[in-house]
Image (tube, rainbow, N blue to C red; front, side, top):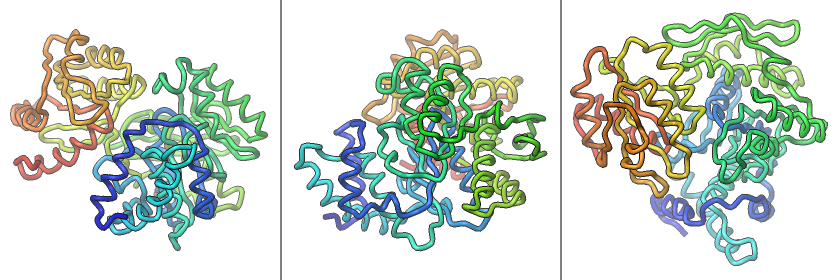
Length: 440
């Protein structure tokens, strides 16, 4: 058993050695031992390749504006581990996490002695989330973000009120498949019998897979571009404006402060899901709450402007689709700026295409390594890139302040790539920008 928060956290992270073990048997075993806490609260399930966290944030903000207390389970974290299990955006406390870790620990030890084998890090965190929310007296509804894939993800033992699949991209292909159709098959595994599914998936191949699964499960399917559409899009200085049309109804002049046209899709998925929950008399959600919630929504690490002078942006673009979106925003909003990019990625990502896309928009790229078991080496990136001004950096802690101090008025620093890297960089950058000193 653990006596401190740090002991509990070390144990949880130590489970990384077990890697990824898709399957639901271990989760079902633990839930049975715990009295099925996963069934204790109303829930919405959110899967997809990119945009899951943003969609969770938009929907949480709408529900909060409606007066509900909302639990969220997300991954990975940006500033602190506890963010992954939050209520109304407030992370679980160190004391609560310690207490729950001590509940799950003996089960993990017992499970390790069975034929199923010990639970992975993500399975333990998921079990902790289920237990925490089921015992929280004030939580009205929980939004669960899928960790990987969907069909065999450890969150996929819930029976949600509705499910969302944001989009499909070629990510985690070594596990989920090489084609949009194969990946869509895994994502579509979260579709439940007679449970509404909302999606912004565009590829015909992927959408057909989702449609077939929805028909098989008799699940009502609502598709962006077919059952609801976005129009009158306008990029604003501090956000985006757009309309949502759904049947004969139009939700006009909606506004969000999260930058990027792609965020209007994530916001729209949240809007139509909220409208569905209201129409089904599951929760009471007003149009005013939807507008207020969208405008107040904020998700760290997604094209987040940390400073305007010097101009610093962080963005967790960790796959091809994410980099494409980042490039689109930069060329649309910052075409007149000298763009210096700092990039890090995991070695199991197909980063050659990511780097090729960054080469097209960057005036200078600094490739960095960081302390993570699956992190790729900066030197490997350097061999791939064709941009003229480039370098490999081993110590980003000392390098970033140097870049910031030399950043010219017409330049912008964009730090992007792995979300694990972004989670290390953001607190460091925030401290430095505020104090102009380094804190390690």
